Image (cartoon, rainbow, N blue to C red; front, side, top):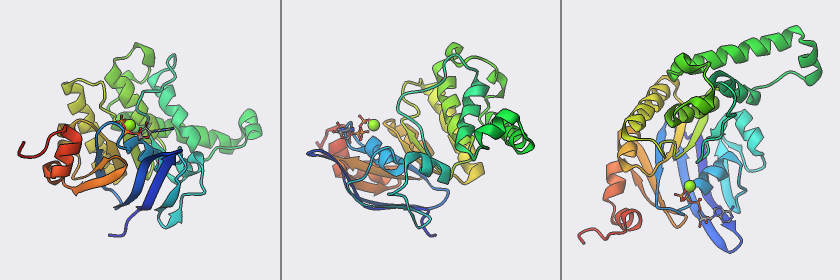
Length: 257
Ligand SMILES: Nc1ncnc2c1ncn2[C@@H]1O[C@H](COP(=O)(O)OP(=O)(O)OP(=O)(O)O)[C@@H](O)[C@H]1O
Ligand SMILES: [Mg+2]
């Protein structure tokens, strides 16, 4: 199958620091890839490079053969490339529903004057956004708490609300940065199931950074390990984890030691 998203010898430098070096990867439509590696390996930087939050120093990133390099993060989001952050960022005093509705701002919107006058096309946009929000909340099992304020909710629901806000625009590529961080085992399982169910239904291309190896094993058919900005292994999670370089980099042990 032809790749949806292609990275060709992508490097990112911060001054003298090589955060990502010569990374070449291809993601087919609907794939679900786990990105693993020790702290400082370059995982977040790579996601930032794909989403446009960080400029690449060299190489190419293309989606559907469109060169993403000249496009801003907002322009890439409009093309369907969306990302979550390592820490939860929500409108704390607003409801789950309104937090997810805010995500619709990334959809094409009518002009400000039209909004003020509430002309028919603007009403259509509003109806579209409300419907998309409701569908996404239902898909992720959030409807029962849709009208609760997010600052009153447990962390797991807040995390899922953030993911719903990304999914409400029906993205093509979803980039998640340690979505399970801070969740207990039960909530991690629930999150995995939500992502899996959504993924299977929607054919979304997903890249997920995760430190929890068990989670990657359960969720991702394919995984890539980074260390010091370079790919050190790729394949099924079991294949990747059995690589001596991964054992050394990720667990700090030499295989057989
Ligand atoms: N904006 C920045 N300016 C300078 N250096 C940066 C910047 N962002 C990241 N780095 C450095 O780049 C390297 C890779 O960082 P990155 O955050 O991508 O790692 P990571 O794999 O996501 O780590 P973690 O698992 O801790 O989140 C690190 O050495 C980090 O200190
Ligand atoms: Mg990171």
